[in-house]
Image (cartoon, rainbow, N blue to C red; front, side):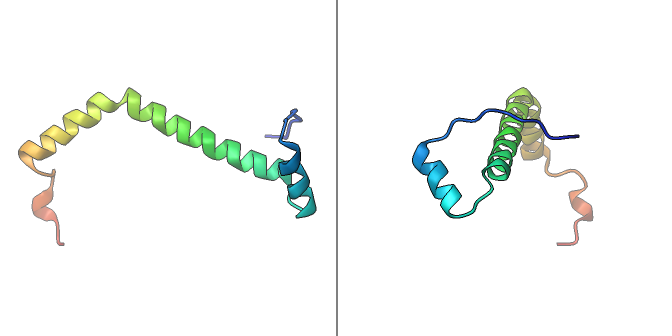
Amino acid sequence: MGRVKVNLTLDASVAETARALGLNMSRLAEAAISDAAKAERNRRWRIENQQALDTYAQEVEAEGLPLERFRSF
């Protein structure tokens, strides 16, 4: 997928510092937005699947881990 131009507003001192340090603000912003999107997708997945996670945890508590008898550690 290609790259697109977007407008981004930053605090002036943050932008000045980044420029002075020779940092690539576009790449830094892209990485931060990507990380934030991943965290939000994970948060939403946990909310959507909380019932299944709770049910599985209850089963493990009551019955132990599946295939536990085959563990070698």
